[in-house]
Amino acid sequence: MCLSIPGKLIEITSQLDETFRVGKVSFDGIIKEVSLTLVPEANVGDYVLVHVGAAISTIDEEEAKKTFDILMQLDELNELDTNDSD
Image 1 (cartoon, rainbow, N blue to C red):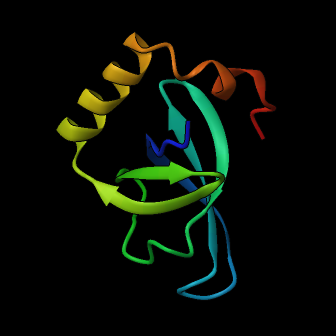
Image 2 (image 1 turned 45 degrees about the vertical axis):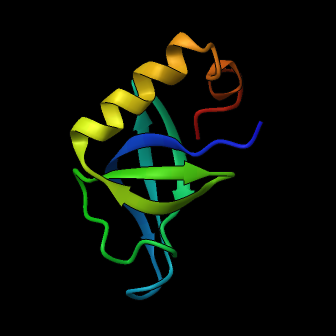
């Protein structure tokens, strides 16, 4: 199943310019580096939806938490925990 998973942008780790950026996103404590190219408006502290290693949109905190809780209940986050965290 193809899903986008909400996470909190905690750090910008690389920035070539305003468009080409990479950041660390926390998914309930699991940290992954993701491309921020599609969300130039995203800032540290924002919640983003991540699909196959790229943030595809920003989302408000309440909606992010609801979505994450549903994914946890559906047991759809196993793959997230098995990959390297950096």
